[in-house]
Image (cartoon, rainbow, N blue to C red; front, side, top):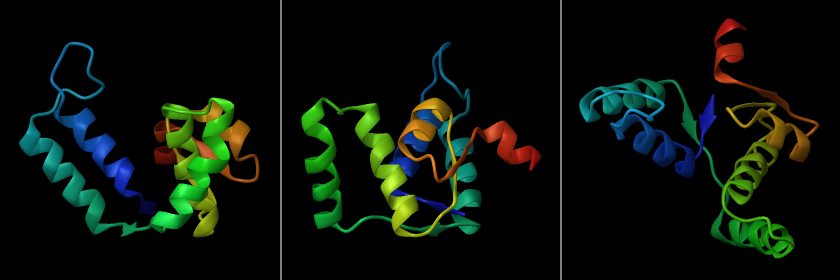
Length: 112
């Protein structure tokens, strides 16, 4: 399993956010322990700065910004490192952008 820098930061912020609408209702300590357990079973992957810039340059001019750009960067990392499966809640958007990859939600990933 691999993860990107941006994904870890997103996960950390979601875990540590404590409001009635938060995805996770974890303390910062519990969130950090969870991230450490994920880190122990994964490796870091990412695009070089020039690759990131090229991805943004090619994708953003058509109005693809915000979450769409974030999804594109994650998918580009998967393609670059021959990662065949992306685990995300954004199934529809990711499948549309990366039809050659297996895109599954976390619940499906846990069952398989």
